[in-house]
Image (tube, rainbow, N blue to C red; front, side, top):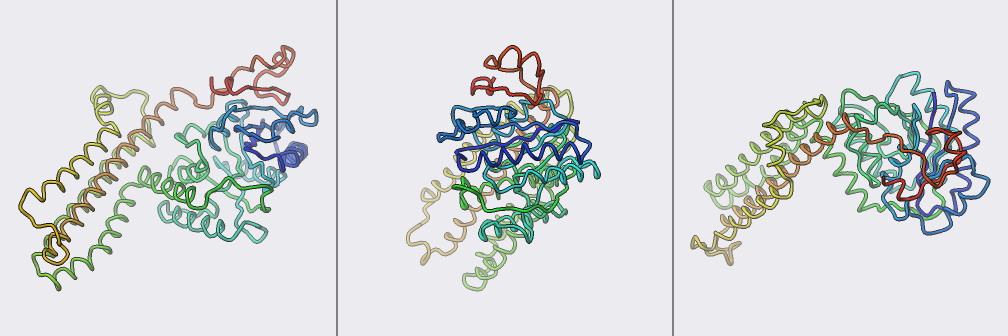
Length: 423
């Protein structure tokens, strides 16, 4: 078997030389201590503007296969480009910032071969970890959330060091291009019954240089990624959870309305709330049916389904839902309701307004969830027909002798431009 380890980098001039040296040294141990007969190192420059590329272009790293983007495409996009640069049976990736030890490839490979798992990752949350406290807490919370929605245990959902079977990549479609590439892969592997994921404790050092991760922005994106995966692969359980949260939030409000305003106010809120619950559960049922297509895709799609997929467009339905909610709120003054000051003179109107806004918000979320699932289904079916990670032809910038001697994915120097990587 052949292993290709992808190392994406964005402005890592301080750490890239050490990382590549360690990776090349680890290749000898991998071939000696595992059934792997060849290990390639693929460096992907994701639009670096510092000295990263010039360092990697030195003769010391002639054995490293190189892919370069002229502009930044994203962490996930760089990893995908690395996968497309090789035909290795097993592919993996690790960060270029000096946090990971490439020697752990041996342990990851042995666990993957022993358990026949689709993905094995190096968990950073252990006694040897030097991860900052804030990031450690965030990773623990994300892992716990993913454990709740999947019913399985995973210590580190966002680990940037993992090895997987190339043949399993199709089942992980679609994967994003940004930093949320890793939690999306973990979520799909835990929620899709056809995939299995294992983890091995590994040392983790404080990174060299400045981190590209934004605690707030990327943390929120990680959260949405996990919730979206839960809606796709476990819709009924997820929607039931949302209903429970809604009941806990609106239960006290309904009770307070009955006590402070009267039974009519309580009914005014209870009925729309019940409608929201029914809407969520109905969405769960619809997505549950789409879930069959997501996990068991079909090679052919019927005419009716093709028409429905064309009619159901994410943006148009979102605009329609927002327009209906706006029109409903705008019609209130026309009904002769004295809106101001509603908190004092018309408390029932205030409560109804809050409820209507909630229904509108839930409606938009539901619309987004259903259409994103339809999109994911389409991407998954497309992946069965067109291989997203199909090996690309050697670039024109490689010499003829290299092209003839290497074939595809061999461990020899090859340089690809940004145009090559996009074709």
